[in-house]
Image (cartoon, rainbow, N blue to C red; front, side):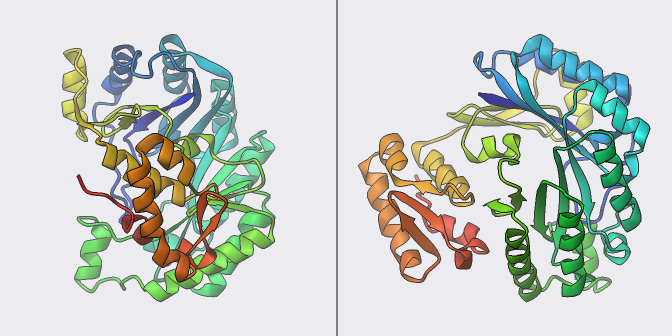
Length: 376
């Protein structure tokens, strides 16, 4: 089984912290959809005939797509790929886009899962992040989505925002759980290079990020949502039992996926490729019948590093038997050696032949995983 990701690069406004490829304009809007469908045709054999079980519209702001645009893209996917009858079809959306009419259109087009960019229910946090919606709009759109029949809902929340105090974060978590949201993605605010937020912090116009606050908020997140019956199945993702994001889980489990659109990434098990992050160049190449991408053939060490990094992030852990089978006895010996210090300091625990992060190790997942990395 495999997945398809479509990158829709348009936004009404570019938030100050965002480093994803997107444009706060409608440039090339009429040319983008034909180009996306053309890429589908050119890349229809990339997944080597595997059935597609997840489709994900990301961005940018895919909820800006009109009903006929969305239907055209979904029809294109069904034309060129074999889609399972129970495929998860996710669309990222902003709260201010989700009026009842829009929700009905999304459902009619075949979207069965929404990922809503709430970020916070508190207005001062939303102003800091330069989000366009208000806290009340975020609360109202969740109710509307549920009333429209969307039971498979996810919301994004951000913690460690300089304006967000612990009581506010506790309130955000309480609102999310009391709303009956089955899936929550929670991320620490990261200051990415070359973003307006990074520049403003450097200039002293905005306060910086406090590591202690982020750790406190992360611990609150873990404790509060587990108490409310959520499974912490990946560092940044928690859900009610069985309500995992199938699409994102496929990334962490190393399944194949095809990325369509400017800046979209693809992976087939042996190589990784990424489209040019420039809409004009993407459109121009597609008009010539070419897919503008760079490609990297993954070495055994790179595939091992990726497996360790992604598997440790999940509740399923890093399988030592799988390392032996896929990468050989040498990699297994190295993994056991690298794990020793973290087993001794309580950041890892070994159950049978699987390594798991402990609660103590969860917040330090990236650093722990990097200690396992092998260099060619």
